[in-house]
Length: 79
Image (cartoon, rainbow, N blue to C red; front, side, top):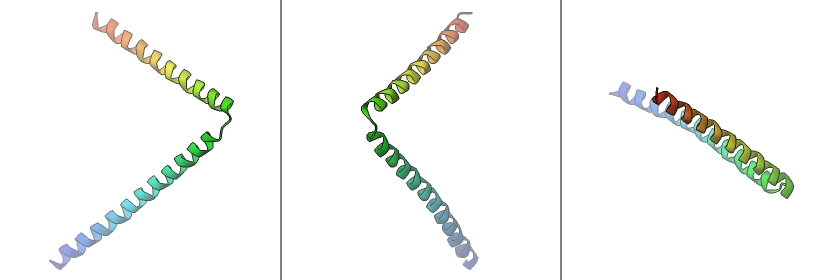
């Protein structure tokens, strides 16, 4: 029984350490994303507009790629 409890507490200790590492990584990610949002908010209107235009162009390119793939699947289904 004592060995079982020792193993159980050791497992809980290891699990807590692993979860702490996950929490630290998530906190760092949120902190970096927050800083990025803050820096983006300070962008000039022209720089923001250029960034948004680039994002729109990327989305359009992705949508066109998906359309081409879907059309190819349709053609293959009719064969």
